[in-house]
Amino acid sequence: MARSVPVIVASGNGASALPSGLRILVRGGSALDAVEACAKIIEADPTDTSVGRGGKPNVLGEVELDASIVDGTTHRTGAVAALRGYLYPISVARAVMERTPHVFIVGEGAARLAREIGAERTQNLTPSTRKLWVERLRSVGETPASIRRRAKLLPVVRKTVREERGTVNFLALDARGDIASAVTTSGWAYKYPGRVGDSPIVGAGNYCDTRYGAAACTGYGELAIRNVTAKTAVDRLATGMPPDMVARAAIADANALEDAAFNIVVLSAKGAHAAATNRKGRRYVWMTGAMREPTIAPRILVGRARR
Ligand code: ASP
Image 1 (cartoon, protein in one colour):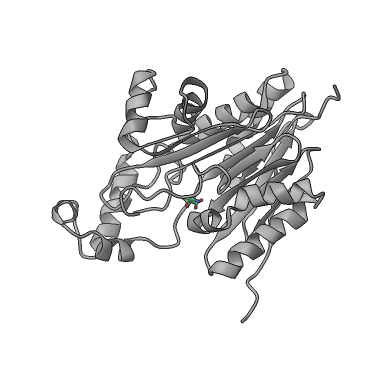
Image 2 (cartoon, rainbow, N blue to C red):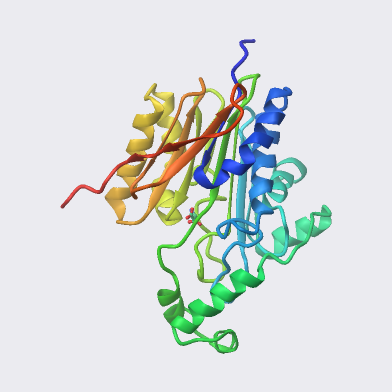
């Protein structure tokens, strides 16, 4: 079988994890192991306030984490959503894929599975993200005590949520030519409890197929769900469309729905890649087995057409 040059493509906030992922690939490890290992590094990093430990909480101050992993060769997938209290949601997602007859487990059930498989527990709300939460509540006239007493959260959530999200994407091609993808996030900051974005929804925020390539999203997840963005991107790769055109088309689809920040990274089965956004200054990162460090590259900017 033809050997591929291993490559990992990620959203900009994934840069610090790429060397570890590449080490796995150059030793002949699988794309699946590489994307999981990369995702775990960012999940455990409390300085990334959009993923895992240190991720921003929901409006009640609870950090609810979403993650998914896809094996592009077997089309096995696993996902968790609104998972609380565990350090590595991506590994719980992988356990859903490999150890259960299911593909998606949420909330209390996801935490129960995490406990059952001995996943590592943690307090995901850090002192600094707690402070940010309290400040946001104060800015809308609430306190931690007042918000917990409220019967109706919706009027508050309409004021606490702003364009403030974040997620990390990893797409990998290994030496055997297999592709895998992983996405993990704390979702939309100060969201309504139980809100689930695109990241754990296979086909929306994350999808890959070893025959054609992979795609994953960051930004306003509701748009990726409405457009089934990642699957649509891989379908476009399957037609022979190059990754830059695929990435542009995905942003144009998002722009057609609403004016909200939206980003995509795309990897083809041959290892070509591109990323696009509708906000200025956004970057993505990539690294191959031949490189010592990740390359940080600008995303293609696709503005919203005036109406
Ligand atoms: N897509 C994520 C979500 O909607 C957030 C983000 O990437 O900014 O949960």
